[in-house]
Length: 266
Length: 261
Image (cartoon, rainbow over the protein chains, first blue to last red):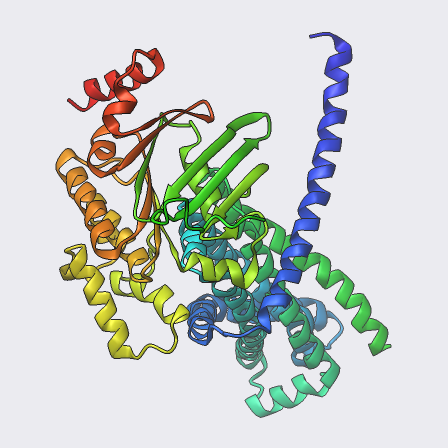
């Protein structure tokens, strides 16, 4: 192989990757349009939506409880030394609550859902695709997109905000435990102080962006699983990409949404 | 465009599947090179060929799971190149597809697998009618005892039978079998062959059976076609197809004879 060929290869690879990236983005947008086309057209798969809400919501509760509680507890514990230097430990409840409501609960919960639910959806739909179960649905005149994708995306979009609210409550409870242990603050005083600095916009934006994160996890995971190829290797790849791309998209969305919400808070 | 589902000259034969000059390639790999096929109502047509010869691609094109690059495909009078949406769904109710891997839904029991398409396509049916339909097809494939089992608890032959039962519950006019005996022992293979003939008799279906198993071809086929490098090499009765000096056909026969004595 001569040096010219060696130099030419990386450039071709880059262009090819770029083309694949834009082709993938195009297919993802077509997939999202297909979701909106199918979501309003009856018949509705209510039973499967409820089943998916249970799978995504209830079965994630133990993990969310643990991480939410520890996040609140550890964040309070780590913030204490800095605040006590200025004699401002009384600000802890409001500081921690703002952090939990505005950023920690939505972000941590969505990332956990992306990891647990995203990989599950990617692997499940991927294996259904490679074992021809999706083709079998088509051949029995059942719309697999409506049954498999619409139900899962809706369940993710509905359940992530609920999980975020729950995670926020558990996180604040963790924070209270730390504050109570150190300052013997009553629960009533803690809650009064915590919510004094929280506005409706904080709660509203938190719930709304959680729904966006849930939609992202649902759509990306379903897209990767539904279009899986290459047998078992493809299933693993679909599950992996579902998690990685969902997490990446959540961080991007968080950056944009924070800028947007802050412009209202000013 | 002329409809395929027309009564032919003698007024007795009705063509339900018509494939004319069909081409299909995946990238640079040419799979089908100008295939022509006519299947009459009530016929069991066997398509023989070695792995990778394009047999499964052919029935996927006939079922509408794949689109042909070029050529006409008509099924029950519908142009498969043009049909889509609700019309395609309606047509698919008349086409049963038995997948090589059976493709049963892992998360559902046998009963739920069978009910799945029925309750969605025939919502007017009562719970009792659905139960009766499920029990009838399970009795037909002799697996009523497995009604509450999951696919993972069934043997290879049983999953094939349930896969066939899942298509039969919709009472299709056409059955497409993709390698129905692949991976099965000779005794179970023969049971599946008998079931294919039984389905033809009881449900009056028209079938295309894709296989590389000569016993399956001999037992189930009214007509046998030999697919080789994307084209039909020979067609006729089993005896007519293999009564030849063509090395390509003889090799295929000898190979089967050696591996399935």
